[in-house]
Length: 490
Image 1 (cartoon, rainbow, N blue to C red):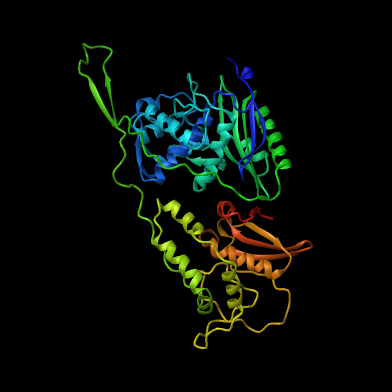
Image 2 (image 1 turned 180 degrees about the vertical axis):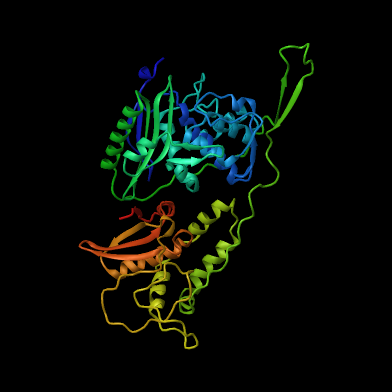
């Protein structure tokens, strides 16, 4: 069957709540091709988070993995490579040898890994998907649907946001070489696009699951059976435009429920492969290879960093003691799964109350203790987070419309920002900025807190961020139903 004859299917979904905006043949079981690698990577992220393996683990490449057909990284049998490079190669280059190596590293064999993929698919609601391998090359019974792949793309985005930036990299270091993104044409041509995965086989045609965000709205589109890369990208762009046109500007964020951790497949803890020579006269001994796929008994992830109590201004401590101290105590006693998850759980552990923000705003204008003689800080300067440094007493200044500004560094590409809302008064904007800064210390510490007075109100912005930190901050805020969109370099 040629790619031209591949059946067509499509799905358009509002990522914020999972509502379907458009579907076409979306429940027909078709060949997913390398869209399969979204599930391969999802299972790897789960294994890393739960201590089964680490991104630094060195994986030995099997003959099977090295022999996979293109697209491939070019791994050699018997060589070793860190898991993180295999993840990058599978996500960016769609390397089949890397996908098989990941499967064997996690489950001992690709067959055992495929069983785990199917268990995970069922857990997240992919009701019409069956995986037979980790790379997506055509195999009898290896089938999925546009709906299921859209559901999977949404789970990749929300369940493991710390890894999602992988899918928007135009190129990356994969250990033995630098690899280019298979979807860079769409990423470069469609505003707001930031992933996720391409796929092509003769049986499947040109497939793509793509996601894009504009002004706080995020759309996910899946297309099966495109006739070419160009025509597929054009169709995805058309469906993206449809999604953004029909999706409401504002809505409550309802993230998908992350499936419970089921652990490795224990139905087959070991596999023994007997390899005999094709010429018994030269090699009559059987070679036994024992591959262990049992669950590890100790966590390979590093110990979570202790959370130090932030240094707060005396006046701010007096006002916020009950609320902020309870947040810190909750954070310090919270049990976390790994270091990557720690910062997200800290940020989400306890919401900042309106009373807390009002108290903080009041304390920023309060007189300092008589025993403290810090350098006078201009009234136009406000801390970007409560952990930044001790507050200085305000010097008398003439009344004027002050722009809220803090320290900012333009090094390292810190030319991005985020907007957390437009308000009718400067006080309301300041209040929103402080509330957001207190709740999202991990990603906004050191940013520029800026209020822009426009014809339609007061925009509350955080500036001085890198593109990745702005993207991460927005996704974390949106997960708490806080309106947020990124601001690019001017």
